[in-house]
Image 1: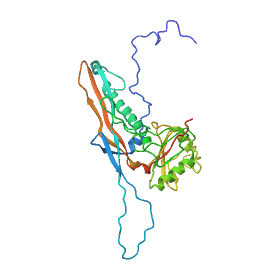
Image 2: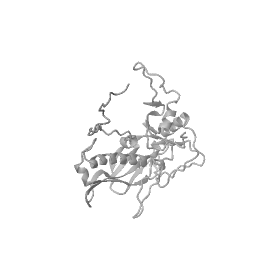
Image 3: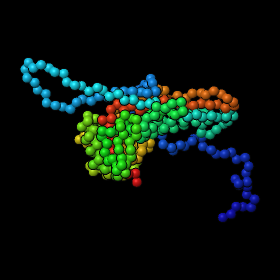
Image 4: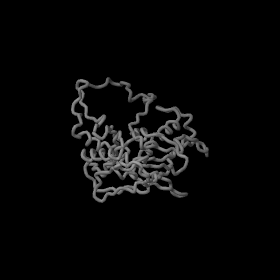
Length: 314
């Protein structure tokens, strides 16, 4: 079919108003499952310290009547610490922005500050789960927190060829080894070791790749749903072992080669400066603001945690 001669259509028209949705759709990742689930405590120094202790192993304990009591040697507590890391992002907008009528937001500054805050939370989550040694810093070097990978030494399995555990006090990172597959056997062994040390893990932090492997663990009743008609479930809500029950939580910011088994109560975020939106000095026809926070990871006792290391990622 063809148009009648001299039809004036939309291609000829001038002045048609734009049709722009008043919503901005953002599909970027924003979840921070580990950061959001651990306790927040206060720090009062750039080096935040804490102490750990453990009970001695059980022993035979029987004595005769009237025997003198002799003191036994006692071990001192261990003193650990981590440096606070400064997270900072800034936004500058031109003064002209205040007079513009924009789709999807009012002032550009307000929109960008909210976005920066979400991004900074992702940065913090990444730092918490990173294999990074602590850095004291100086006038030319930024302080850095030691990430979770730099603390775990007791309940670590699947260490690949050439791999080695760190010292365990945050002063050095673990040495990555040759990667091999994440297996249920390694997972069950690590859960057992944590239990033997007195830990009570409640969640597993892992990448999407490793989550797909966990979905195939033997005994995971995940093949068919008894719920809604036509629904097929393939998930792990709670994984029950003789050594405790844990939730499997996929996390985008952890290294895919690391599978962490966590007792959340044994981790905390020590905040020297909670996240804050601050105005910066005006230097011209613009507006400047920064979002800044300062915090560090606290590993209250690494014996309550576990790691399946050097997992294959493809």
